Image: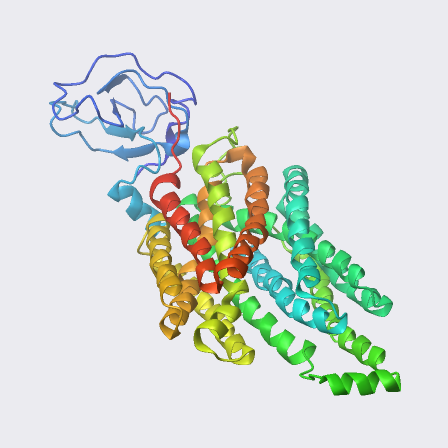
Length: 530
């Protein structure tokens, strides 16, 4: 197998390479073929004068991207009647669009190296961030319950935790992309870690002031940092090796995210929740003794220690990132030093625009499913909130198992195919959850987390393919799609109040159907050749 760079001196990008008639009798070519084969002959073995005679099967072809050219030596097309001179070699170049789904292409995608040589250390350092940012994301559910208790606010007011959090994600995604466009992924990651650490440390003065709004401001800063981290880390991991293995690589890194989610649940249960539940009589007695406000402040202070530790770790990790040598990831494939500068492309590519919509739907489905899982379990089975909470931990564990097992499955099944089957499975499971609000439905809704596991990273990686010099901007827009977690969860809340919690799960069912449609019909990146 000869590599495309060997013919760079002959085929310049955009250069018309021939204007000859059909080669041989053209048998078996067909006018409707999607690709043509160019055949070179008579090249000198030790020289650079490769082409003396060029014949092709169809009309003249302009080669736009040498990266897409597949070169094969000493092979003659069958059924064309072509004869090569003795001692000459033949070179075939397929100029068909990438991603058309041939068996050979699929096999090569599955065999592409996951982590190229020399890239393991930056992969490990950045993968640790996927674990880290899951902790503050999933501590929000703990904070909502704790702040309702310590600040004596209702559920509507406590929802400000999620609103300000998602607002930080949404507003900082574009600035994050612009910063990385100018200074690179490392600067974006360091900026995100500094913002994360600063926001966590702000919990201490917020608790001392005993002001709920100060906590919301700190959460906004935390989410701003996470927006930088996700905008930088996802495309960096995707581009750290061959594009053919980007989905597998990103799914492996994302597999550590649910482990952080489980860790957050344990931290909240052990270090934030006190387990003290006061009766009305206890409250009245403490108010009469003048100790009730002190008790509430003590409950508020319980959230501080975990965030101080998390903030310290984030700042230390920023130093680690600064000390780590990052490869040049300006190219679409950072493992190839010969890839050249990124191509100039338009953001208005069909597969990318559909990826934004699909990511919006998926994040809404995931956040909504988990947000209303405990009420669904309580309604369907009659168990208490503590037992339902353990089942929520179980669904997060299923999510983790799905991430790791699917990273292995992608060695044998293409990412788009697996995404499509997983989305269809969740449509079926979600419908059972709606129609059977009992233990069967609970098990089905719990199981959806297993199949959700690959969706975010796979949609992200598919959307970024072929985005060239727009990769960082495209990453920002995909991160902004996380707003679906706020918008569609609100829709589920409206349905829950009007028709019941089981009916509200029709929202994720529709979302998963959208993911399936994207996997089967919208996720393929097609190069435009002229």
